[in-house]
Structure formats: C-alpha cells, structure tokens
Length: 118
Image (cartoon, rainbow, N blue to C red; front, side):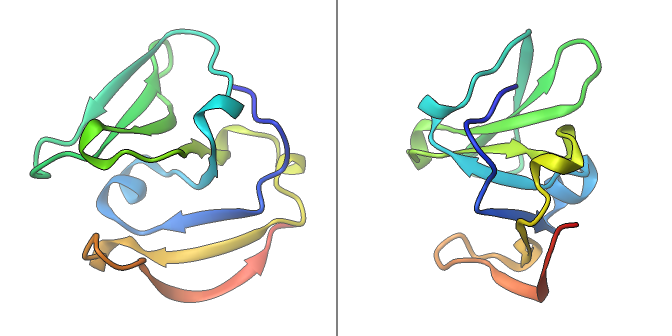
C-alpha cells in the first residue's frame, strides 16, 4: 500500500472492530491510495446496514484499509497506519476517539488527550 504523504492526523479508535484488529487510521481520498497485492474484504453483518468494508491482505490477514459501502458514500478511505514504518507518522498528531460509544450521527467523542507520535 502506498500513500501520498504523511497524514495530518492518525486516529486510534476503541470501537469493537478497531480494538480487535489493532488498527490506527489515517484518511485519504481513494484516488490518492495505491493498493498493491490481493486483498479480501469483510462487511460487518451485525451493523444494519453495514457502512464500511474492511480490507485485509489475502496472504497474511493484516487489515490494510477500509472503504465505504454505497449506504455511506465517502470520498475518503481509512488506511491502517500500523502497517507503515514509524517514520511515516513521526510528528503526526494521534487522536483517541471513542468509537465504542459513537451514535453514527455526530462525530465520535474523544476518550483521552491527543499526543504527537515520536
């Protein structure tokens, strides 16, 4: 996976998916992201309706990114920044969102103060 630049912000979310997959997200326009290699996707069936699909590497199973499904058209994709070297996020703000309690109407709350990644 290739991204065009350092992200402005990296998001550490505590929702069920993010907690279980160990992801930290940065957001880019789909046109800016290059995905190489085969991925598979999974849309969470306990969401009615599902609004994103998680993509994962067909070889190792690591979550690579997410895409929005038609119900939630977004001009952004989440990229799992844990797959990149530390230098790709050095100096970037890390925000801790409270996705576990997100109502999907308003922006998620913040569960603790932001920090800057080393």
